[in-house]
Image (cartoon, rainbow, N blue to C red; front, side):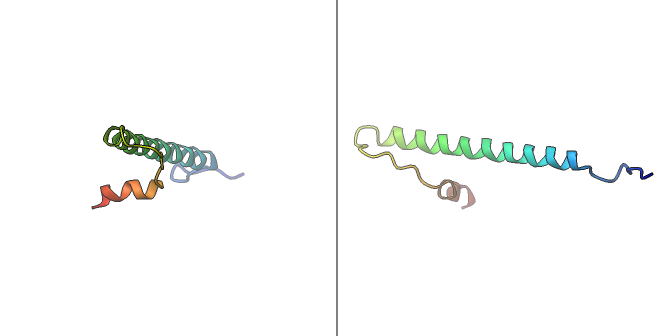
Length: 65
């Protein structure tokens, strides 16, 4: 009969951590997307004819500089 040590991570814990990490990444990406779109729509509200949404990586580039 095997016992689980307190130092071992169970499969359920790993799944929970992965889901939480995915949720955090989604919220951060969604927030950045909304910020960029709001900025673009305010600046080009009059002259905008096409609404092109850039790739998420392109939007995060400014934060890395």
